[in-house]
Each structure stands twice: as structure tokens, then as C-alpha cells.
Amino acid sequence: MLMSNFLKIGHRGACGYEPENTLRSIKKALGLGVDMIEFDVYVCKSGELVIIHDDTVNRTTNGQGFVIEMTFEELRRLDAGKGEKIPTLQEVLNLINGQVQVNIELKGAGTAEPVAKVMKDYLSKSLTSWTPEHFLVSSFNHFELQTFHRIIPEIKLGALICALPITLAQFAQDLGAYSLNPSIEFLNQAFIDDAHNRGLKVFVYTVNLPEDIARMKAMDVDGVFSNFPDRL
Ligand code: G3P
Ligand code: MG
Image (tube, rainbow, N blue to C red; front, side, top):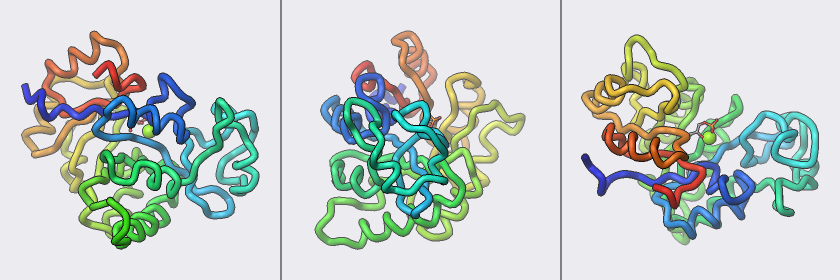
């Protein structure tokens, strides 16, 4: 078991403790000593990249509506929990500033290009601490990942999946992914072993219960996403 390389990934920051995908949640994850922080990105109506999980603001804020139909100004008026605002990708990157790795999950269609543009900007700035090695870009939408890869080929890709495919990890290898990021729901040892045999890392979401954490370590996965990263 490669325990020393087991990656502790804060899910939506550390959303078991603080409002998900907020700067407060990101700060909490940093304080808990994670190796990587995961967060979700959408493009809103006025073009800004905002950090939010759902396609609507209904569950995580005091507002109502679809993210892609709201301007940044409208989104910023909302309370995302404990008085937090919905942050931008730039605000999150400025806060983390290369202290840990980040996993940017592309949620909405059409996110690959604007996210790549922002990342290129950060990677070219000599005053920031970001390097290509800090980033893992993932998505359930593998076409978005292909688009992203064409723009910045040196950034690692994570192929998200919530299924157990007949061809196991073949799709992730075909995509040229660095990691297979499966749901714990459909995971089995054959899927993990197949990914490893193809040279892929395996990062599992979302693993919160102590018994599941122990089981994932025993199954030799390379890291897990947790709402409570201190439990890892
Ligand atoms: O990237 C791991 C996990 O965040 C994927 O699912 O729905 O929580 O974004 P979701
Ligand atoms: Mg996510």
C-alpha cells in the first residue's frame, strides 16, 4: 500500500465544516493540511467564472435561478452561507496561491476555454506561485476535457465517472487522462487495478465515513475527496 502518496483532497473546500465552494471553505481546507483542494466552476451570464456546484443557486444560496442566466452582479448579491459570497476562480486561485494543488472541476458546458485562459494567465505571471504541476482539471463532460487539453496540453486531466463501465478504465486512458476519478458508489477492485495497469492514478469521491476511508486505503487508491479532509 502506497500510504505516503495517498492524496488528501478537500471536497468543495472542506464543505463538511463550512459553506461549500466559498473562500471560507477553502481557508478551512488549507488549515486542515490538505494536499489538494477541489472546487466546481461555471460560467455565468456576464462571462465571469464562478465557483458553485449546482446549475442553480437554489440549494447553496438565499437566491433562486440558473447560474448561466444570472449576471455576476446578481450572483454577488447572494449569501452563499455564513455571509459568504459566491467566489470567482481568480479569487480562489489568489487565496490558495500555490500552497497546495487544486482540482478545478469543469461543470457547465463551455467552461474549458475560459478556465484555460485564466490558468494561462496565472501560469505566465512571474509573481504567482502557480506551476502546471499544481493543477488537475476534471469533468464528467469528457468533451470539455478534450477541449481543455487542446489549449493547455501540459495540465493533468481527471476523468470523472459515476458508473462502472464494461471496458473499465479504457475511456480514461483513451482521453489521455492522468487520473480516473470514480464515485465510491460503483467502485470495485478490478476497476482500480485496471486503472493502475493503464498507468492512471485513482482519486475517489466522496469519502467521508471512517470505514470507507479505511476501505479505500486498503484498496490501494491514490487519494480521496472528502468533505472532512482531517479524517483522512
Ligand atoms: O470531483 C469529485 C466530485 O466533486 C465530483 O462530484 O458532484 O461533487 O462535483 P460532485
Ligand atoms: Mg466537484
